[in-house]
Image (cartoon, rainbow over all chains, first blue to last red; front, side, top):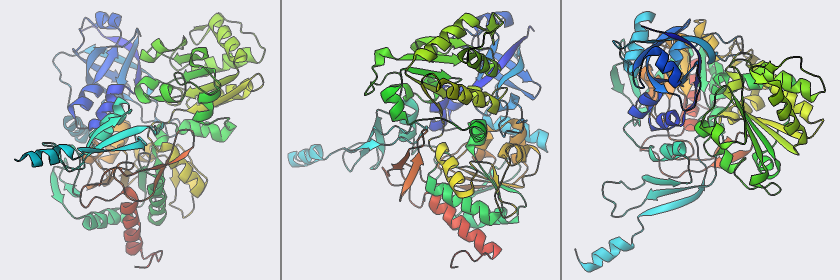
Length: 132
Length: 465
């Protein structure tokens, strides 16, 4: 499978904002936060279409997400809306500021058609396995 | 049904409208919301006291008002147990408080966290709880604009009210932020699209400086795309040109020097420059140093023109949580009260760091959802320790919590005086629009009960027992 390296950004989207007020366990929130937005040229490099499943990996972790089109051209960048899924790939190190580095991380995006995006309960169950 | 009955129904007002309601979503605290609440009347399937409309609110604020009572609302306190917290026992508020207070009392390094989506009055009580529990108390700014506050402590800040910016500012810069997504009405109420007393909309110039173009970029007059993690370099290059130095490069941080020169000329020729900055400066490489440089740029600009700077604060009262903590302890967030006196050291006493180092042995989330906003390394630590959450609605943290205490929505349901600080530091009073569900109290009342219970357990004679 082809894979690409991107600069990973996490941040707010209006849909994610609506989702967090609609309820963090709601379908709106799940759909808004389980995606990585990529430039059309990057989707082409990965030989995938919007809605296909990819795995995003940084040195801090990995997560399975849907690939979606970025709202404006941003080749070489991947944007994941804030949420528990984005938090799987960000650093726990705060550089002595209290603030984790949540933007500007290097990430590898790989198509994984055989994997599924986990729901919140499954994601937490997965984390619990590695805790216990 | 007689004609008289039909007339009576038709003449009954179906809803009451409350005007000038403040929206408790983001730091804009928009105060022009008109909320419609159903009254006794013939509205099928809509119970009395339901919010059915929030005119003027943005889509996010609108959702908050209209989703107050939905399937995710919590109506009874819960104690949860089992490996994945699937065993649920509903208890009374008093029982839940006893269990929660016991957890805090037994812990050696409890963390009390959140406080940005609640009132100043609740913040006061939370700090009191941290004092009597000997806890680390941190608010959500530590994973938001905390680095910016650290920069302010280092270099100060020249700022203004949003009203002053609206009335005077002719050059507005949004740096590292996307108000369309996070503060949807900011440009319409306070900056780009609002007529000021001394500033016409069409004469305003608006820059968007960010690492990628967004929908917001389409609506501004000028855009600068900076390379990720290089905001600091660009800020210092702008300062260098502004202060009379030349740049021996064709581009800085991916921005052509020609474009930086044009930007500097615009800055110098403006009468009132405003820089709004977002998490694009605080969550990226450089963090507090980026904000220091932006504040330094503002200070430099004041040698040429009038300039101010302001963070775009997210949660509606995150500014208030900083104010209350500062007026109480002298420190705006990440305060440790374990030794009996306040101690502040972000990186050491900040919630994420205390968790990631495995030092926290109990966690109390108040009006916040750390399981959805902390890095995985910190969430995994939360899974190892007792977690208490005080929140109106189910969220990611309720799914890993041991004690869930439901509360009233501040600014919609909570009784008594409830105040919040707007992002520019203006305190505003939040009104109650509808009654909370039966038995559900406000954060400040519940935290007061917690303080009293912890005092009772620890034998602290702070209140008459």
